[in-house]
Image (cartoon, rainbow, N blue to C red; front, side, top):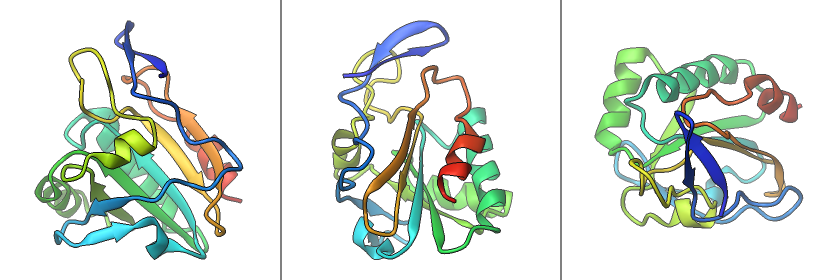
Length: 166
């Protein structure tokens, strides 16, 4: 369990992020076309996983925009955005914002991603959603970098995440 805050009030996640240097947990998530995406689909590429509570909040939307912009210049890298929002919300947002360099994925069906990655919020008003976190997986499927953002209303450390991709 990890302790984080929401506007200064303590909340807890169901677990901890995967350990750096270990194999990244497998996942099955839903794409905007309702097909399934698996971690193995990105084998041989670096994967930046931007995890957020909801695409319909300002900070989550901002992180998606920033990583979309950064992703355009990254070699052999795929950027994923994961939340429990419905794929229809992802599709609407990406169309309205011109998001073309990030693959948005939803954990709304199995809800296993949040458990496997330790990011499901366990307490507080956002219980059941995913916490704000970054996980980077290298070409061999090993976790290279993680950041559990300590305050939900805070943006992730973009520079550190992008540096970890080099």
